[in-house]
Length: 182
Image (cartoon, rainbow, N blue to C red; front, top):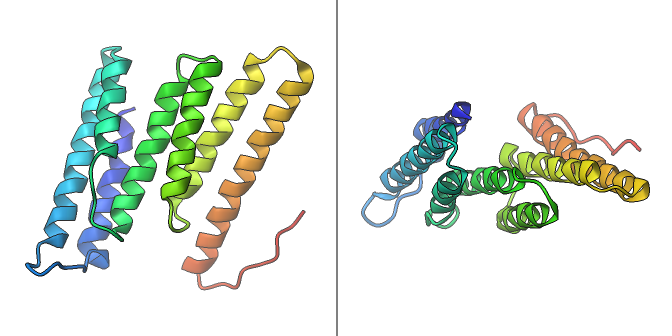
């Protein structure tokens, strides 16, 4: 769990090398975003420590605090941080297992999907977490047809993640998009 801090530091580094060029009238927007990213990182680290102590409810509370951070409108770093938090919260909520845990986890995935304004690593990661939820459902249900359908949904979620990743890779490499293969 302690490895998750690299994502927030990656966001901070990206912000520092040029993607945080927005300024409000006082030129404080860059600093605000950096402070908010730092707060999110600290909250995730605190969640990690709570998890090490077996206090999942406290870790869930920490991640929910990340979701309450109000980044400036149009902040891609803020959006990424919130998408990451929705994915992490979904996994934390899924951990106890069961149908209710799956419903709560899916609610976080849907909230993240609604928040997303563009494709990103974090948007693709949400789809990967959705696949994990479907996989958990496939293991939980006893009806073979329901288990098979849940695995199909997991595959569809992974296909969405792969499509996002491929689209972004092509854009970063300045390659044309290829038609979908199916």
